[in-house]
Length: 188
Image 1 (cartoon, rainbow, N blue to C red):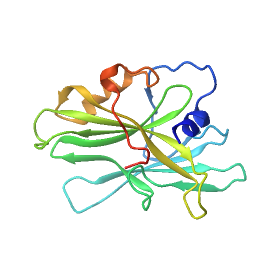
Image 2 (cartoon, rainbow, N blue to C red):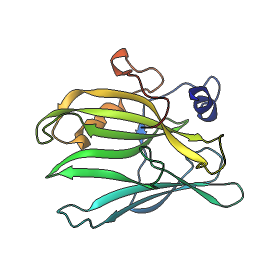
Image 3 (cartoon, one colour):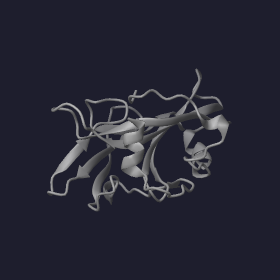
Image 4 (cartoon, rainbow, N blue to C red):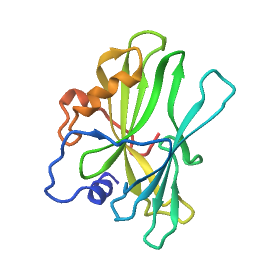
């Protein structure tokens, strides 16, 4: 499966570069995530959840060459099409999902505080997801985010927003040994 993902998104002999955040605005954003030449749809939205902070979500829709769109289930579920783009605990963001690219492929990066007391300085667990095209059974989604790499931050942070500086300096093809951690074959 990893070979299929890499073959789908990596051109032969291309050298990776550091990750760059993809600037997204609230509403619809056009980004060619699957590399087929058609701009896909990335939607940032929010809804009131009757708490002090609104829920902020991100959804992905892949544009087919025939003009149709496929909804992409979120990285941690095959039932929902929106993913929390950020969750907060007071003023500290404890979970943030952002889109990055390295010039060849796109990554969904999940950053989540790692520990018991979310109000203290804690390491952040990063999980990088790659988009893969499903080749299996009928009735399955056409596309899915697959966990590719996972690692803990070098430092501790009050809010995961601050931790993304570590991601920006990461070359995903040649991460330092401390970064590499086992990731399950299927998305969690």
